[in-house]
Length: 177
Image (cartoon, rainbow, N blue to C red):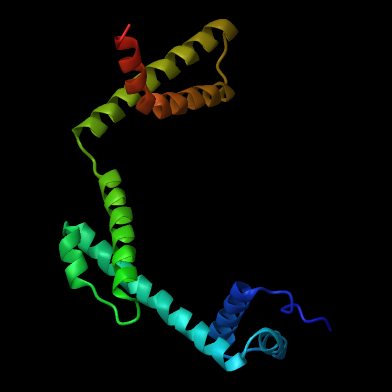
């Protein structure tokens, strides 16, 4: 039988090893042979276990940063209060800054203010009027009602509401003329 792990690169071998040990608790002979051919097996196992622990540590730090961003803490307070024994201070700082930036953008994006509510209501009204006019025009031309005619009306409503974000840009563009 051909060893399927023989052509795996280092990252694939790590993934296969960790997956197999997490799910079965042991490594089959084919994987062990493939690892031994390319690496020192004991060093590979240590490196794989270190990677596993490092992923958990980064998950813990990421969770801490997320929790603190949701509370509204600033970056300086977060940098002071989060530490790690596994990650060097410079790598930790970069990781925290990246996660802070990522979570801050998500928090800002999730914020609902009066402008968003106004645009949503405006889009709802415009989409309803446009869909109704389209539906009335189709009924006028065909002279009969069909549920299949509702599909184009729904599509038009969806497109109008999707374009509501771009309406402000279009209005600003037209305002200049």
